[in-house]
Length: 210
Image (cartoon, rainbow, N blue to C red):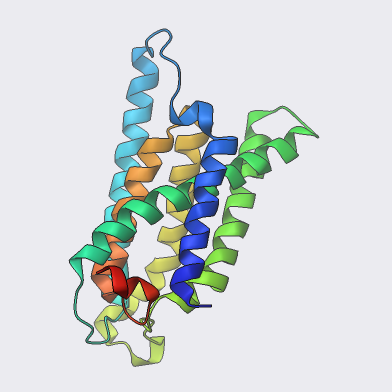
């Protein structure tokens, strides 16, 4: 099966996860207004997350190759919106699963957060190894082939990925801020497409829709 069809299936799974597991959090009922202290904490964490996202995009751009492929702005927009939302729904459903599994043993918040974040990290690694490494065009530059002044970006990539997971997990765990994470993920995905010039249309049945 063409990898683009796998991506479409993955996005469909994300929508199902949103409906089944995140419904109340996608469109929460308006009750009492959030207190000022909570809003300040949420906004501060969102700002920190945004800075981590910006750093991540800069590092990714400087540690990957576009292979001379043409840049497709339409793919960037579509991928950012659809993958930014649908994959976020999957990630948060997985995080919630980890929370609930840990709740069988304890109700203490640090352990619930740990359960969620461990499931998030395991699934994130799994889906990137199984899907994205095969779906995205060649873009990884071996460390031995990188210019000396670019090596630092390669070394910073994994720590920044961990920082992203921590920030997004905290936004969800403490504030259930689904749409804030969707926004941040969409920016990351736009940066990915811009950096490696990925196209949804190349060698894909979707080329008929372009």
